[in-house]
Structure formats: structure tokens, C-alpha cells
Amino acid sequence: MSIQMEISDTYIKEKLANLPEKMLDWAMDVLLAQAHLMVGYASVTVNVDTGSLRDSIRVERGGEGMGWRQVRVRAGGYIVNPKSGKLVDYAVHVESRFPFMAPAFEMIKPQIEELLRTSIVEKANE
Image (tube, rainbow, N blue to C red; front, top):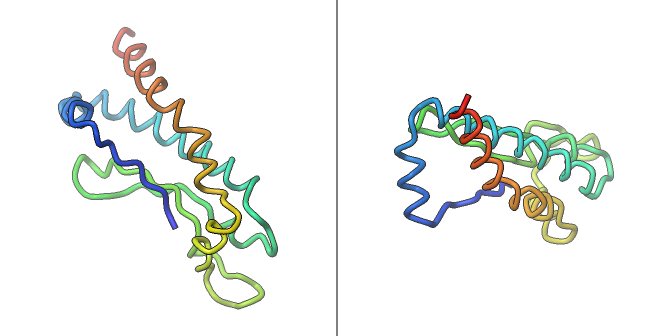
């Protein structure tokens, strides 16, 4: 399971595509920090039985194009549930009954735009 924020505003997409490389790096720093914060929020609010689902919540970087500047917060996989002996594959089912990823995203979402703006402006003025 993952949560993805699509930027639908064409103006913002065009501006991001035209940012100099250094500014994109600064923006990536902000996004990574917020993604790690989201992991923290999700980890403390997830419904816990064995802790396997909680332990599977993570930040992943990757993607094609733009120098692998894609950040994902994911839950599931990589961790074996001791009860089933299988990889955690039930994050979406838990999320539907006891939301933990969506509320974590909603907690960080209002800060992202402001942090991007202030971070890039501050660093550009250094």
C-alpha cells in the first residue's frame, strides 16, 4: 500500500520541471523529511497485533526520470508476519478499517507547500 500525491496544477508542474537542479535537490530534501515524519505518524497510529505491519512502514525513493526524484511512503512487504510466516500483505485491508496512512498524510500535507517555498527561497538567498 502506498499513498501518492499527484500535483494536478499544471502551473506548479511546469514550475517544478523548470527548477534548476540544485533547487530540485532542496525540494527533495523537504519531501524526504516530510515522508519520514509521515512514517512516524503512521507508525504510532497503526493498529498493532504482532508489529509486523508497523515495522513495514517505510520511505522509498525511486522512479524514472528527474534523477530518481520520487518519494513514496509504503506499508507492507519486506517484513514477515510471525503468525502467518508470510510477507505483510494486508496493509490495505487494515487501512480500510483502521486508517493510519491517510491520517498521517493529512497531518503532513498542509506543511509541504509552505516548507518547499521557504526552504527553496531561504537556500536561494544564502
